[in-house]
Image (tube, rainbow, N blue to C red; front, side):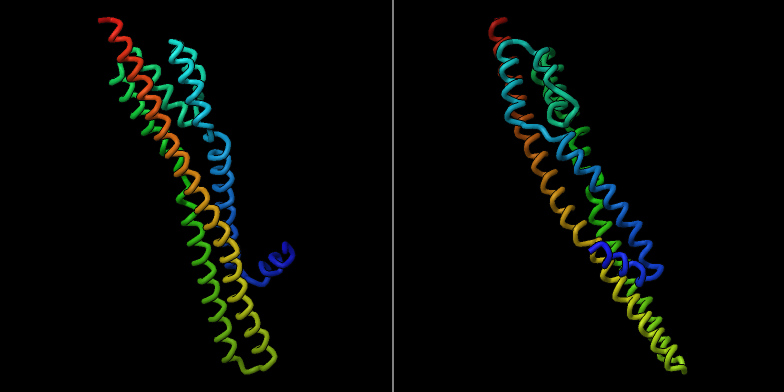
Length: 213
């Protein structure tokens, strides 16, 4: 497979290099996004909320805050817990502000993968057009041997650039779809458990007010 791609690259001419640069850009984004979404930002929401709830109900808000790291969901809950000492309204505003900062980090750069797939396909098409131009020019050459060589070279460029562009675009589009689905899942989980955490803070605030009265 690797040898076939290498041979394809050699026969594709100069247009293969821009496609390769775009492919490297796509791979870099893919690796960064996979790391962030699968490891850095991926939190077991149910387990995390259960531990926070246990600490809050035991009136150990500081312990609950210590459970929160820099991942989007814990950072949003942490903002609410820190502000909870000033009341549920302050906690809600703090969580809303934290969400505005955290959620874009989940979606960051993923949309570039769609662009990478489109650009690699278009570059492949551009290489195809260039190859066809070479092939058509070969028709005007008088020498039969040279004509055959140039015609073969033009067709080779056209087919190779198209194939290489699609080889880059198809997996990138599949990865883009996966990352989009993963991002949506993380955001839905953030919405669910940040809302549950807010309700927990509100009930705690109401309980403290009731005791104060």
